Image 1 (cartoon, rainbow, N blue to C red):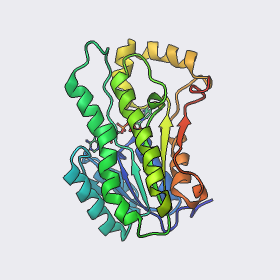
Image 2: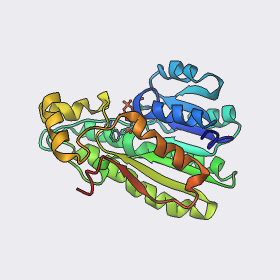
Image 3: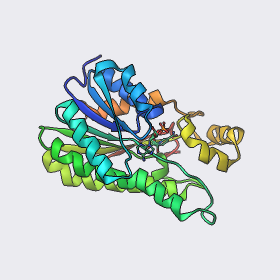
Image 4: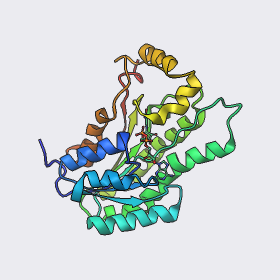
Length: 251
Ligand SMILES: NC(=O)c1ccc[n+]([C@@H]2O[C@H](COP(=O)([O-])OP(=O)(O)OC[C@H]3O[C@@H](n4cnc5c(N)ncnc54)[C@H](O)[C@@H]3O)[C@@H](O)[C@H]2O)c1
């Protein structure tokens, strides 16, 4: 099936590679137009892979002015806005007794505060349509944390709380707000956690022991949920934090 997102205009942050890039690939396959916002200028090459369907705008999501610019420039390129995906993320890991306040702040600035900036500037544009969807990337860690992950888990838990509160606020406008909570996904993003656990072999043992499906996800296994939440197929779904974790959360 294609064309599930025909006419949809989407801005996604953190989409140069991995989970975000797979989401863009899935969006474009369903005929959406997509603006990729990232601080990494490699996003320009990523956008070119999708031809006329995608466009790159450099953004630092920790800066309110930069996010405002992303939304304004993105809306200008797209001709409006139907979906905002906030996928940019940062990970630091470490024991709570050793953890630096600067790292705590950096995690909250990227993983949590940026979602407020995105919503603040995107909502006026989303309100112009009959429907709208905001998709925030949280994490299984935001529901059930692990050792060495106190700050990251707290920042992702904040995203889930923000998502449900915003869903209440925007429901009268028929703007839906949901979060996606991946478990272990096989990307270099997790290197800080892997280091804290004692290396790749140790992580593999943990994954085998705690994930009922016995393995990590690959990024393309998260992408279908982005398409579903961006599409009108999810028209009655809001205020949800959807876990895609191979069964960990309910094990
Ligand atoms: N990999 C996992 O196991 C996993 C699990 C749960 C949730 N997540 C979340 O999924 C999202 C994507 O992770 P990924 O594994 O694809 O890693 P990734 O490193 O490919 O994606 C993170 C992206 O965010 C961008 N980014 C970071 N700081 C930024 C800033 N200040 N301004 C703009 N862009 C910035 C990076 O350049 C990168 O493109 C993140 O939000 C992450 O927390 C990942």
